[in-house]
Image (cartoon, rainbow, N blue to C red; front, side):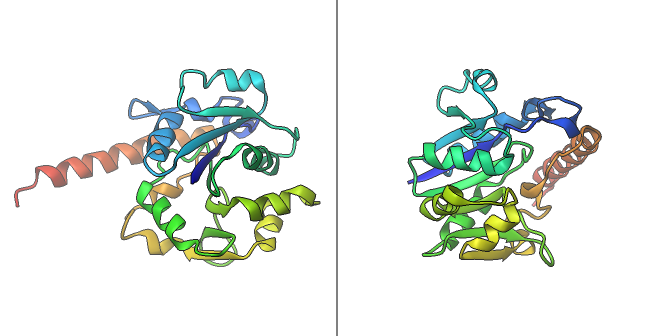
Length: 211
């Protein structure tokens, strides 16, 4: 069984205090985009929020479960801990809420590559990778999170028997690598909107081109 875990519990300081998952691009919110894609590739979806009040914001999404952090103030590590305990699936796809263009075909590749390993994580050049756009084996993640000392995702990844897939290997599926788009700052949003409009116009033009 596969579980998708969406981490939404950040304080959104870099987004001017605004909740990034409700940002809109081309008429749809980030969270709508995320959840629609996840529904096609996982069996259940768990949203991990800061607290019960934040969970209430996701009440309209009746097909997801929203749970609050159990260990407060630990950042993504705390969200992963709560998500692991809530998940029913043995295989987890973990994603941050500020990645609105996740690609279902890319996620399928991550799941299919796992084999007997603990994790499959996309990696850029060098030591830059995407631990919040990755697949994990729940048992391995739980074992680390049970007694971890560091709050660093890098320390967590280093402790796992992980497969690292080059980000460039996904261009045949996602030519612009939109699946890894991450909106950290409020001023990134307008540029992202313009980029998305350009992608849509290009797709329309290709569709209208004669054979």
